[in-house]
Amino acid sequence: MALVAWISYIKTRGEVSTQDGYFLAGRGLGAIFIAGSLLLTNLSAEQLIGLNGSAYGFNLSSMAWEVTAAFATICMAFIFLPRYLAGAFSTLPEFLNNRFDDGVRRLSVILFMVGYGLVTIPSVLYAGSIAVMQLFDVPGLLGISYSQSLLLTIFAIGLTGSLYAVFGGLKAVAISDTLNGAGLMIIGIAVPVLGLAALGDGSVSAGLTTITSTDTEKLNAIGGPGDPTPFGTLFTGMVLANLFYWCTNQYVIQRTLGARNLAEGQKGVLFTGFFKVMVPFLMMIPGVIAYHLYGPGLSTIDLAYPRLVRDVLPVYASGFFLAVLLGAVFSSFNSLLNSAATLFCLDVYAPLKKQPVDDRTMLRVARIASIVIALFSFSVAPLLQYAPEGLWQLIRMFTGFYNIPVIAVVIVGLFTTRVPALGAKIAIVFHVIAYGLLRFVFDDDVTIHFLHVYAILFVIEVTIMLVTGWLRPRSEDWSYQPRQLLDLTPWRFAVPCAVTLISCVVALYLLFSPIGLVGGLSAAFWPSLVLLMLVNLGIWARQMVKTPHHASTLS
Image (cartoon, rainbow, N blue to C red; front, side, top):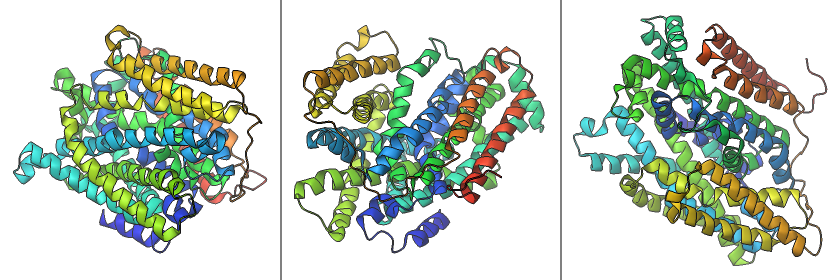
């Protein structure tokens, strides 16, 4: 952890003295740092425990949240990112201000800031602390109560993560994310390999044969009505939730807005999509292994991954594992903190001043805002243990207030020219009221899956905006006013990489389906698929590192 902090400090020293340097890493991030930061910002302790727990208790249907994100990263690379970079936008609300007006900007900032401050940031702290306590028995090690351990862990994680966001800005966040991401990949590969060896009495191939020939229903990714993620939701609300997260969520897209050019941004985003396709092997197969090792007798499904780690990981590696686990939590926390401060400074503070703010003042305000938001999160996070329906229900409930209206407004804004700001405002207000009624008044009467509800609301809100544009169109067509700050030449390998990515998604669903391993497909196909994906990974890495985006031939 000290090594990661030292490298991050060396790489950012003297480069965070300007607004662009602090908020967007000087618009100089390369593909590797974009991909590493996107990956670790997305993956945290709750995914390690939650996804493996879902595989242990049910099947692989929950992999849809990870695997279908590949489609969203392709949309980001080809549709959203070129437009964001052409306008040289620093935040999503800035784009909405450009497309609609300052009122839509303020509404979007309110949605983001309330969601981040009350739920997302505290939940990352709380879930990360719970994961550390489950895996390392902090109360027993320190001889203190559970509540004291929770407060201590939340404060330790939050304080360390805040240092990156407050003093290092986005570049320090991206560099630390990438380094910690390398560690996460090592652990992600080591745990299932060691678990298969334990299941096969020392033989990885024997363990692989066991999980592909017995209780194969655990490998089914085609979720039914009783599974956590029914397969039909992939084509309705799941698409929209992933489009919001990967294409419009400020704390995710901020590192792509800091790309040094369009080609590097596209490389980083598409490379992230490839790693998302690998997630089932790294973060769900261990849950299947745990089921074969321990049976269905664990008191809670969330204990599957912690017990497997304790049983198969050598004790001398536990310190490294703790550093990686904390690094994943730091990443999500400091990314959220940096983005919340960015939204406050650029979309609340600067517009109120009504005149240009110098860099020194803006950075001082950003650091103060980060500290205030962090302290607020420290106070809210422990309260999440009293959530009546659990953490995941709370996150899902409140995220629904802002994810669908944001993606609906952005899509209509990008693909229409006459829809006015009034349509976007009506759609946002409608969603908040309708979703609130569905969640708190008519919740017992709604029998369809919440992802289908997302899709229904999305269609209604897009219709509202289009009808408003037809009845009261803008006086003149909206058009981009590009600011050519960056090279906007696309990466010439973007299309073949996107095709490869989609083919991997399809192959993965065929593999983990009744016509694949679930139905008795030979286990020999599994290593072949993994080998193919690793070969693709090697090809992509070579193209990212060694091939200039403007090259004219493929060797």
